[in-house]
Amino acid sequence: MNKINIGIIGTSEIAFRRFLPALLKNDKFNYIGIASRNLKNTEKFINEYGGIAYSSYEKIIYDKNIDALYIPLPPALHYEWAKKALENGKHIFLEKPSTTKLKDTKDLIKIANEKKLALKENYMFLEHKQLRRIKEIINDKEIGDLRLIRCSFGFPKRSSNDFRYDKKLGGGALLDCGGYPIRLMLELLGENLKIDTSKLYYKDEFDIDLYGDVTLSNNNVTAQLSFGMDNEYKCELELWGNEGYLKAPRIFTAPPEYNVTFDIIKQGKAEIINVGSDDQFYNSINHFYNCINDEKVRNNEYLYLERQSDLIKIVKGE
View 1 (cartoon, rainbow, N blue to C red):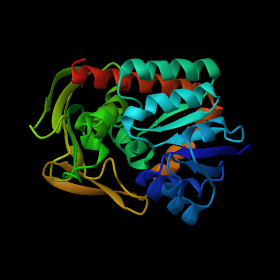
View 2: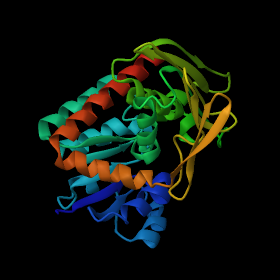
View 3: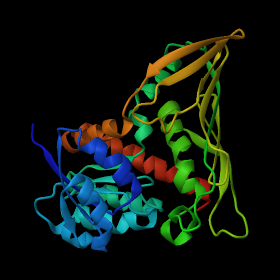
View 4: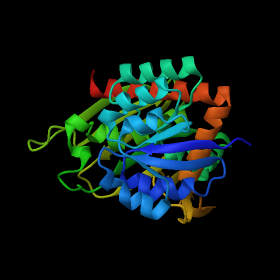
């Protein structure tokens, strides 16, 4: 098995807390180093995880020893640096959202496809085993025929200097937390789902959408989605069938050690389904490896990446 040499562009907290611990457990990749425009920002990473400290994004992109790059920069910077990296032959593992514009996402896909390079958007929850179990429950009609899906994802307001609240950096609730339930609906209802209604809400002190809701449908099933960045924390999926309903209370953000359970309620009686723990970031890195080595997996990733970006564009009203 050929190992992939991978580096990081940007010194984000998710790279430090989640990506590198998962990566260093993975025997398919070699961690090479991390790039920052300010070398001081790399000190914490090098002290904890080792590797090379690159003094610019360009230096890590032009390093011929690097096969792939993880890019957890603010969303507005994704297109510029992912494009440069793809043009220099690097496989790209992008934090969500892929870009802030559909045309930019399509351009990245075009370059990646021409060069046979992986381009993966990191919605980690797709790789948690709880989603496989949910699909089984739907397909096996354990709650009968599906009638309605409700999904909510939001969290309390963060510090005022957080990039999520800065329009120039690609902030906004839709791009940050709204993408999660939309991507989940693509997985559960298929790529042909359509958006029926949507609304983004603003407050005077912000130049970004602070919360919102979307209604989608496909195959006679409606999905009602809500999201926000100034909300009480909620991370919940509910499936309502004609013979029961399921509640998954930690659908997007289960940490590696978290024991996932579902409630299935039928005729007023609740059954707890024990799914167990799973490392969705580790699994997402594995999927990236499969994108690199399997053309079919890679092409499927392109398809859903573009459809996700298209749905986001529709909700934004662009």
